[in-house]
Length: 302
Image (cartoon, rainbow, N blue to C red; front, top):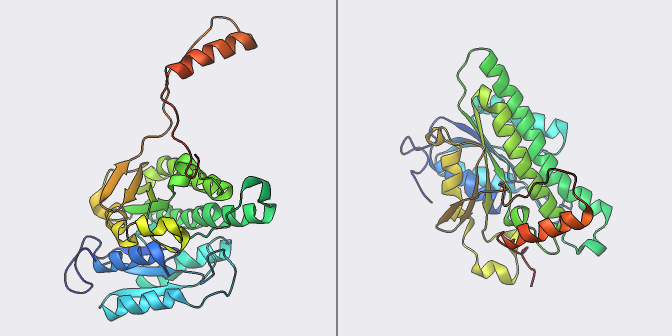
Protein backbone atom coordinates (compact mmCIF):
# COMPACT_ATOMS: atom_id res chain seq x y z
CA UNK A 1 0.00 0.00 0.00
CA UNK A 2 1.43 3.43 -0.93
CA UNK A 3 2.14 6.11 1.61
CA UNK A 4 2.38 6.14 5.35
CA UNK A 5 0.56 3.60 7.51
CA UNK A 6 -2.26 5.15 9.60
CA UNK A 7 -1.06 6.72 12.78
CA UNK A 8 2.64 6.74 11.82
CA UNK A 9 2.91 10.04 9.95
CA UNK A 10 0.97 12.99 8.55
CA UNK A 11 0.31 11.58 5.09
CA UNK A 12 -1.07 13.31 2.02
CA UNK A 13 -4.65 13.22 3.32
CA UNK A 14 -3.90 13.90 6.98
CA UNK A 15 -6.87 15.47 8.79
CA UNK A 16 -9.28 15.09 5.88
CA UNK A 17 -12.54 13.19 6.19
CA UNK A 18 -13.24 11.07 3.14
CA UNK A 19 -16.36 9.19 2.06
CA UNK A 20 -15.91 6.25 -0.32
CA UNK A 21 -19.06 4.61 -1.68
CA UNK A 22 -19.06 0.95 -2.65
CA UNK A 23 -15.98 0.56 -0.48
CA UNK A 24 -16.54 -2.96 0.78
CA UNK A 25 -14.60 -4.63 -2.01
CA UNK A 26 -12.52 -4.04 -5.11
CA UNK A 27 -11.63 -0.50 -6.08
CA UNK A 28 -13.63 1.11 -3.25
CA UNK A 29 -11.92 -1.00 -0.61
CA UNK A 30 -8.51 -0.17 -2.10
CA UNK A 31 -9.35 3.55 -2.10
CA UNK A 32 -10.55 3.46 1.52
CA UNK A 33 -7.42 1.71 2.72
CA UNK A 34 -5.18 4.03 0.71
CA UNK A 35 -6.83 7.16 2.11
CA UNK A 36 -6.52 5.77 5.63
CA UNK A 37 -2.86 5.01 5.00
CA UNK A 38 -2.38 8.69 4.14
CA UNK A 39 -3.97 9.86 7.39
CA UNK A 40 -7.60 10.41 6.42
CA UNK A 41 -10.68 9.61 8.46
CA UNK A 42 -12.77 7.34 6.24
CA UNK A 43 -16.49 6.67 5.95
CA UNK A 44 -16.76 3.24 4.32
CA UNK A 45 -20.09 2.91 2.52
CA UNK A 46 -21.32 -0.40 1.14
CA UNK A 47 -24.79 -1.87 0.86
CA UNK A 48 -23.45 -5.42 0.90
CA UNK A 49 -25.27 -6.63 -2.20
CA UNK A 50 -24.32 -9.09 -4.90
CA UNK A 51 -22.60 -8.28 -8.16
CA UNK A 52 -25.99 -7.74 -9.84
CA UNK A 53 -27.29 -5.58 -7.00
CA UNK A 54 -29.50 -8.27 -5.51
CA UNK A 55 -30.17 -7.40 -1.84
CA UNK A 56 -28.98 -9.66 0.92
CA UNK A 57 -26.69 -11.69 -1.31
CA UNK A 58 -23.65 -11.04 0.82
CA UNK A 59 -22.92 -9.81 4.31
CA UNK A 60 -21.38 -6.67 5.74
CA UNK A 61 -18.21 -5.86 3.82
CA UNK A 62 -18.13 -2.24 5.01
CA UNK A 63 -17.61 -3.34 8.60
CA UNK A 64 -14.79 -5.64 7.52
CA UNK A 65 -12.95 -2.78 5.79
CA UNK A 66 -13.44 -0.56 8.84
CA UNK A 67 -11.94 -3.31 10.99
CA UNK A 68 -8.90 -3.43 8.68
CA UNK A 69 -8.39 0.31 8.99
CA UNK A 70 -8.82 0.33 12.76
CA UNK A 71 -6.40 -2.58 13.11
CA UNK A 72 -3.77 -0.48 11.35
CA UNK A 73 -4.33 2.47 13.68
CA UNK A 74 -6.57 4.49 11.39
CA UNK A 75 -9.99 6.05 11.90
CA UNK A 76 -13.07 4.82 10.06
CA UNK A 77 -16.80 4.20 10.39
CA UNK A 78 -19.15 2.05 8.33
CA UNK A 79 -22.28 3.21 6.53
CA UNK A 80 -24.63 0.62 5.05
CA UNK A 81 -27.28 2.87 3.54
CA UNK A 82 -28.48 2.94 -0.07
CA UNK A 83 -26.84 6.04 -1.51
CA UNK A 84 -29.22 6.05 -4.50
CA UNK A 85 -31.99 7.22 -2.14
CA UNK A 86 -32.41 10.67 -0.60
CA UNK A 87 -32.33 9.23 2.92
CA UNK A 88 -29.28 7.11 2.22
CA UNK A 89 -27.30 9.93 0.61
CA UNK A 90 -28.25 12.40 3.33
CA UNK A 91 -27.36 9.86 6.00
CA UNK A 92 -24.01 9.25 4.35
CA UNK A 93 -23.00 12.90 4.75
CA UNK A 94 -24.42 12.94 8.27
CA UNK A 95 -22.32 9.88 9.13
CA UNK A 96 -19.16 11.78 8.26
CA UNK A 97 -20.18 14.87 10.20
CA UNK A 98 -21.36 12.90 13.24
CA UNK A 99 -18.20 10.80 13.43
CA UNK A 100 -15.54 13.31 12.45
CA UNK A 101 -17.12 16.77 12.45
CA UNK A 102 -16.32 17.55 8.84
CA UNK A 103 -16.34 16.30 5.25
CA UNK A 104 -13.58 17.05 2.77
CA UNK A 105 -13.66 14.43 0.01
CA UNK A 106 -16.32 12.31 -1.66
CA UNK A 107 -15.31 9.34 -3.82
CA UNK A 108 -18.29 8.05 -5.78
CA UNK A 109 -17.53 4.44 -6.64
CA UNK A 110 -20.56 2.22 -5.95
CA UNK A 111 -22.01 0.19 -8.79
CA UNK A 112 -23.03 -3.20 -10.15
CA UNK A 113 -23.65 -4.90 -13.49
CA UNK A 114 -26.60 -6.42 -15.31
CA UNK A 115 -25.09 -7.14 -18.70
CA UNK A 116 -27.32 -7.94 -21.67
CA UNK A 117 -27.23 -7.37 -25.40
CA UNK A 118 -29.62 -4.55 -26.23
CA UNK A 119 -32.29 -6.80 -27.74
CA UNK A 120 -32.36 -8.76 -24.46
CA UNK A 121 -32.03 -5.81 -22.08
CA UNK A 122 -35.30 -5.14 -20.27
CA UNK A 123 -36.41 -1.92 -18.65
CA UNK A 124 -35.81 -3.12 -15.10
CA UNK A 125 -32.17 -3.93 -15.79
CA UNK A 126 -31.75 -0.58 -17.54
CA UNK A 127 -33.29 1.32 -14.63
CA UNK A 128 -31.39 -0.60 -11.95
CA UNK A 129 -27.96 0.06 -13.44
CA UNK A 130 -28.61 3.74 -14.16
CA UNK A 131 -30.03 4.11 -10.67
CA UNK A 132 -27.01 2.83 -8.78
CA UNK A 133 -24.34 4.34 -11.02
CA UNK A 134 -25.84 7.64 -12.10
CA UNK A 135 -28.33 8.50 -9.35
CA UNK A 136 -25.88 6.93 -6.87
CA UNK A 137 -23.34 9.54 -7.98
CA UNK A 138 -25.76 12.46 -8.14
CA UNK A 139 -27.40 12.20 -4.73
CA UNK A 140 -24.23 11.92 -2.58
CA UNK A 141 -22.69 14.70 -4.69
CA UNK A 142 -25.70 16.95 -4.14
CA UNK A 143 -25.87 16.39 -0.40
CA UNK A 144 -22.12 16.86 0.01
CA UNK A 145 -22.26 20.00 -2.14
CA UNK A 146 -25.05 21.37 0.03
CA UNK A 147 -22.83 21.03 3.09
CA UNK A 148 -19.86 22.69 1.38
CA UNK A 149 -22.01 25.53 0.04
CA UNK A 150 -23.26 26.22 3.56
CA UNK A 151 -19.69 26.20 4.87
CA UNK A 152 -18.53 28.62 2.16
CA UNK A 153 -21.46 30.95 2.75
CA UNK A 154 -20.67 30.94 6.48
CA UNK A 155 -17.17 32.20 5.64
CA UNK A 156 -15.36 29.00 6.49
CA UNK A 157 -12.66 27.95 3.99
CA UNK A 158 -13.51 24.96 1.81
CA UNK A 159 -11.00 22.83 -0.11
CA UNK A 160 -13.32 19.99 -1.04
CA UNK A 161 -12.80 17.24 -3.60
CA UNK A 162 -15.13 14.91 -5.48
CA UNK A 163 -13.78 11.97 -7.47
CA UNK A 164 -16.36 10.27 -9.70
CA UNK A 165 -15.92 6.83 -11.24
CA UNK A 166 -16.63 6.42 -14.93
CA UNK A 167 -15.24 3.68 -17.16
CA UNK A 168 -13.79 2.94 -20.57
CA UNK A 169 -17.34 1.81 -21.31
CA UNK A 170 -18.46 5.39 -20.71
CA UNK A 171 -15.77 6.75 -23.00
CA UNK A 172 -16.12 4.29 -25.89
CA UNK A 173 -19.08 2.03 -25.14
CA UNK A 174 -18.92 -1.70 -24.43
CA UNK A 175 -20.77 -4.43 -26.30
CA UNK A 176 -23.29 -6.14 -24.04
CA UNK A 177 -23.25 -3.23 -21.59
CA UNK A 178 -25.61 -0.64 -23.03
CA UNK A 179 -27.02 0.27 -19.62
CA UNK A 180 -23.61 0.44 -17.95
CA UNK A 181 -22.06 2.41 -20.83
CA UNK A 182 -24.90 4.94 -20.78
CA UNK A 183 -24.61 5.38 -17.01
CA UNK A 184 -20.85 5.81 -17.10
CA UNK A 185 -21.10 8.33 -19.95
CA UNK A 186 -23.69 10.21 -17.90
CA UNK A 187 -21.25 10.40 -15.00
CA UNK A 188 -18.82 12.26 -17.24
CA UNK A 189 -21.45 14.87 -18.08
CA UNK A 190 -22.32 15.21 -14.41
CA UNK A 191 -18.64 15.69 -13.58
CA UNK A 192 -18.21 18.57 -16.03
CA UNK A 193 -21.32 20.37 -14.79
CA UNK A 194 -20.45 19.88 -11.12
CA UNK A 195 -16.90 21.14 -11.67
CA UNK A 196 -18.27 24.36 -13.16
CA UNK A 197 -21.14 24.89 -10.72
CA UNK A 198 -19.29 24.09 -7.50
CA UNK A 199 -16.00 25.89 -8.20
CA UNK A 200 -17.24 29.02 -6.44
CA UNK A 201 -17.70 27.06 -3.22
CA UNK A 202 -14.16 25.67 -3.21
CA UNK A 203 -15.07 22.24 -4.60
CA UNK A 204 -13.03 20.44 -7.27
CA UNK A 205 -14.65 17.63 -9.26
CA UNK A 206 -12.84 15.10 -11.43
CA UNK A 207 -13.52 11.63 -12.82
CA UNK A 208 -11.48 8.50 -13.32
CA UNK A 209 -11.96 5.68 -15.81
CA UNK A 210 -10.16 2.82 -14.05
CA UNK A 211 -9.23 -0.65 -15.21
CA UNK A 212 -8.57 -3.20 -12.48
CA UNK A 213 -9.23 -6.77 -11.38
CA UNK A 214 -12.49 -6.71 -9.38
CA UNK A 215 -15.77 -8.61 -9.09
CA UNK A 216 -17.05 -6.55 -12.02
CA UNK A 217 -14.25 -7.72 -14.32
CA UNK A 218 -14.37 -11.43 -13.52
CA UNK A 219 -13.66 -13.91 -16.30
CA UNK A 220 -10.98 -14.15 -18.95
CA UNK A 221 -10.24 -10.41 -19.02
CA UNK A 222 -9.52 -10.23 -15.30
CA UNK A 223 -6.22 -12.11 -15.47
CA UNK A 224 -4.76 -9.39 -17.70
CA UNK A 225 -5.84 -6.51 -15.46
CA UNK A 226 -3.78 -4.94 -12.66
CA UNK A 227 -4.78 -4.86 -9.00
CA UNK A 228 -7.29 -2.23 -7.82
CA UNK A 229 -4.65 -0.85 -5.47
CA UNK A 230 -2.79 0.44 -8.54
CA UNK A 231 -5.60 2.94 -9.22
CA UNK A 232 -5.88 4.30 -5.68
CA UNK A 233 -2.76 6.56 -5.60
CA UNK A 234 -4.30 8.83 -8.25
CA UNK A 235 -7.63 8.86 -6.40
CA UNK A 236 -5.91 9.81 -3.13
CA UNK A 237 -4.01 12.62 -4.84
CA UNK A 238 -7.17 13.95 -6.51
CA UNK A 239 -8.93 13.77 -3.14
CA UNK A 240 -6.22 15.70 -1.31
CA UNK A 241 -5.12 19.32 -0.97
CA UNK A 242 -2.19 18.50 -3.26
CA UNK A 243 -4.47 18.51 -6.33
CA UNK A 244 -5.24 22.22 -5.96
CA UNK A 245 -6.33 23.68 -9.31
CA UNK A 246 -7.20 20.37 -10.98
CA UNK A 247 -10.91 20.15 -11.79
CA UNK A 248 -13.21 19.11 -14.62
CA UNK A 249 -10.74 16.47 -15.80
CA UNK A 250 -11.08 12.79 -16.72
CA UNK A 251 -8.22 10.36 -16.17
CA UNK A 252 -7.76 6.78 -17.30
CA UNK A 253 -5.86 4.79 -14.70
CA UNK A 254 -4.56 1.27 -15.21
CA UNK A 255 -1.57 -0.17 -13.41
CA UNK A 256 1.28 2.31 -13.76
CA UNK A 257 -0.42 4.27 -16.56
CA UNK A 258 -2.27 7.56 -16.05
CA UNK A 259 -3.78 9.24 -19.11
CA UNK A 260 -5.54 12.59 -19.34
CA UNK A 261 -8.59 11.90 -21.51
CA UNK A 262 -9.53 14.61 -23.97
CA UNK A 263 -13.15 14.30 -24.99
CA UNK A 264 -15.35 15.86 -27.62
CA UNK A 265 -13.59 18.71 -29.42
CA UNK A 266 -14.56 20.35 -32.71
CA UNK A 267 -13.01 18.59 -35.69
CA UNK A 268 -13.31 19.31 -39.43
CA UNK A 269 -16.20 21.65 -40.21
CA UNK A 270 -18.10 22.65 -43.34
CA UNK A 271 -20.36 25.65 -43.73
CA UNK A 272 -22.89 26.76 -46.30
CA UNK A 273 -24.17 30.28 -46.87
CA UNK A 274 -27.58 28.79 -47.59
CA UNK A 275 -29.52 25.86 -46.19
CA UNK A 276 -28.08 22.49 -47.19
CA UNK A 277 -30.13 20.14 -49.28
CA UNK A 278 -29.99 16.56 -47.97
CA UNK A 279 -27.73 15.54 -50.87
CA UNK A 280 -25.41 18.49 -50.28
CA UNK A 281 -25.30 17.81 -46.54
CA UNK A 282 -24.40 14.20 -47.23
CA UNK A 283 -21.70 15.14 -49.74
CA UNK A 284 -20.15 17.62 -47.30
CA UNK A 285 -20.33 15.10 -44.45
CA UNK A 286 -18.52 12.48 -46.53
CA UNK A 287 -15.69 14.96 -47.13
CA UNK A 288 -15.50 15.81 -43.42
CA UNK A 289 -15.33 12.14 -42.46
CA UNK A 290 -12.48 11.62 -44.92
CA UNK A 291 -10.56 14.36 -43.07
CA UNK A 292 -11.30 12.92 -39.63
CA UNK A 293 -9.71 10.22 -37.53
CA UNK A 294 -11.93 7.13 -37.35
CA UNK A 295 -13.58 6.57 -33.96
CA UNK A 296 -12.17 3.94 -31.66
CA UNK A 297 -14.38 0.86 -31.55
CA UNK A 298 -16.42 -0.02 -28.46
CA UNK A 299 -14.97 -2.63 -26.18
CA UNK A 300 -15.91 -6.10 -27.43
CA UNK A 301 -16.51 -5.00 -31.04
CA UNK A 302 -14.73 -6.84 -33.83
